[in-house]
Image (cartoon, rainbow over all chains, first blue to last red; front, side, top):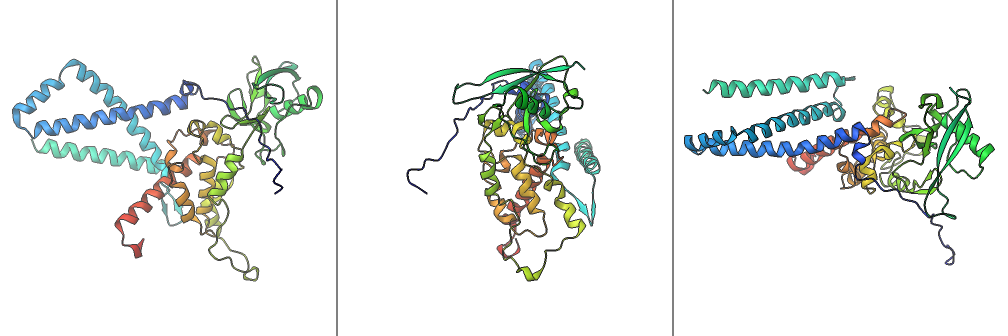
Length: 137
Length: 248
């Protein structure tokens, strides 16, 4: 290339994203809400660890934990966290057929069937947990 | 429908102004006109300096993607009658790309990324012409056909907030096209593509907003392609950890 030749560069105009871009479209708002529900996942994990810790330190520690958890603010917080967790879980269950293409021979398992499989697995896992803890009483 | 339509068109003329402006045109409402027909009318009869890309006028070339009333669409496939009659039709360039002039965005970034993933059939050793074609069954074709429908219109990039916030993200169409070749029985380049796409700016930047699949005029479903890729990358990684080298 001729050393005197200068590559043309257009005078670009760049548009900035507005800070509330996620309120402009329902799907964006839903996406940000789903991301925020990760906080509820974290909170629930902390609660579970605290529960196990209390259970492992004898009856007085467990009673103290139950008293703490029955305070109004924590009950409200945990109800909100449970709703957020449900939203989070449903979102990811519905994502699964997008990521998984299951073929049996030349037959591609339809997305709806994969989704039903997800819900059945969820129900089975829940039943197992209920049976295990229900039976140990 | 009234006899005319008000068009508000984004104008950017860097030789005269550093900031863009909006021009308003009253365009006759032609029977069964698309937004592109209205733009062509403006260029032919009202302002010849208006700049935009278009070619085939039948939803095949992918050139005429623009933002119409805030939505990324192919202007050759958007009827004026489908837009609210009471409001002006607002036409802007696709969001996410730097604007060169008027309705034209600079898409070099996409072209470079397409090259990075080798979006073509890669063979370790090409057979000579005398060896004949690489044959493929209809079933093998069906594995990637959906992704091969991509026309590079870039509506998916415009709809993706991640790309607009982090332009280094390799983006939906490039990943869908990489997947198109990975799933092609004639291709042998999936390992190289995985190396590129498993970087930070690859598949893991996608947080599954899902809008790329919603706006795609060819139902390619880039969001699905990306999630499939994530699963494949995770299995690949797991195999590399669990299996001895010879059995990966």
